[in-house]
Amino acid sequence: MRLLLLQFLIGITLSTSIFAQKKPNIIVLFADDISARELPVYGSTKWSVPPQGGTTTDPQYRANTPVIDQMAKEGVYVKTAWATSSCSPSRAMMMTGRYAHIHKWWHLKDRGTWENPQGKKITYPLYKSSPATIGHIAQQGGYATYWAGKTQMSGVDQFGFDEGIFTPGEVKNKKNQYPYSDFKIKAKKVDGKRVLVNTDTDQIVKYYAQDGWYWQPHVQLMNHPEAENKFEWWPNTKEAKKEYGLHTYGPDVEMEYILAFMERKKKENKPFFVYHTSHLGHDGWNFFSRDTNVKTREKWPGTPKIKWKNGKYIRTQPKVTGDEGVYDTHNTVTDGGIHHHINYLDYQVWLYMNKLKELGEENNTIFIFCADNGTSGYGKSSYKSQRGAHVPLVIYAPGFNFTKKGEQDILVNISDILPTIAEIAGVEIPQEYEINGKSLMPYLTTKTDQHREWIYSYHKDKQLIRGKKVLIDGYGKYFDVTKNPADLISFPVITDWSKVSEAHRKEKEMLEKILPRYNNYEDEHDAP
Image 1: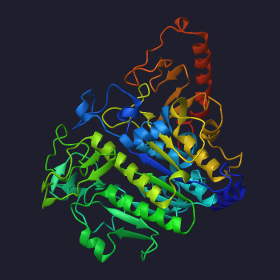
Image 2: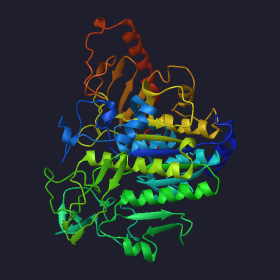
Image 3: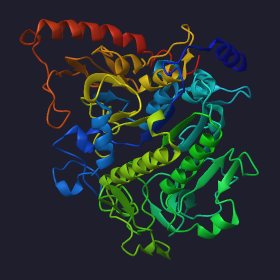
Image 4: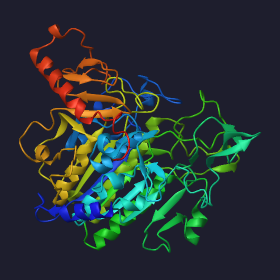
């Protein structure tokens, strides 16, 4: 595998970047479990409702995203962008630009195995199946690279990122447990049975094991220039340890380190690539409550309170007191709800824009906002219609002469991000190395009105594919997608092909011929 990686890196060549004078910075903000319908700019008549998800038309639960709205209208936003229906395979698709027929990450709980040199079968590492990750591509293009947030994959130092800050969530290192927080859901034996316990309250809970990533978060630094070790728990200084506490919010810590990285690289006169895999949008245990009822507890813990006023955000400094599940947030934290998570993402995008202006890099940065799959309680893990795969995608680059603006009625796949970054960075990938994505740059910078003829998704052994007229979902149902329904998913089912156009029938045949290319779940489920 080392030889393969060496051969691949030798095979990569630097082509002439379309940005001849100065390579632009690239920021990818990859949000978690957020359907396109949750963002107001997409105009859906329905969105998700707290505390446990579902669907509503109640405006009080509608997200408010003035910054992303403006970016979408002044930049571009894609009407139909697809990921997969769950997190791990979408993150694999983003990281590699490839589908599961190569990397074998079929689903969160269904990943192909690989026999390591010690003879042990483990999850097939993405950096083994796909040595051309987005981090490696950016590095080859001369970029300083930073990964922040959720990981959901082992070997985080193998993906081409110079530095990182992780709020990992996954419980992996049993010998080196995080020392500063008891906000954990941990497995233990009670009366001889394995149960999950909230270590803050010692309550048995029906959930999944996790190290908290929102309030009083578990944080790890990678290759920080002031750290003593390659991987180091944060807080790692006297000052940081003094400030750390119940009021510390994981997404804020991530942003602090990201912005500091951007500032350092600006001083070094080096373009930067930030891959920000935020937890925001994902459910998480609400450690500020003792409620363990799966029907009443808050799926999405509250965020620090923010307010949009006179063109800027005002953030309330959190104040939290208490212990063992009984806490007082002193009216500084919102109620639970995914709309608050999306609002906070908008606040963080505002922070990005402010920092770029401060650094003089606003007009030399390409900012991409997207998500990994549909909203929990609505779209996540669903392969019905495009409920699970349909995600937001906004691209904002004010300093560049894009030929498109506002809503784009095209088909885009999350796998398209890697080759887009390669073209921006001036990196040419060898033809023999299969990439399933297609660069967006020709579409964004020329007069062409087409990008892709079809987009593809998967969920374990289920396949989904969509053209401009026909969608085939994971249940094998056919939908007419020539018109956009108000809720973005309720397309009419096609049952009588004699009642649709000849173009529909031709596209159906085309899509059916494509699916077998990627359908090796049963025969080649694991690593070669």
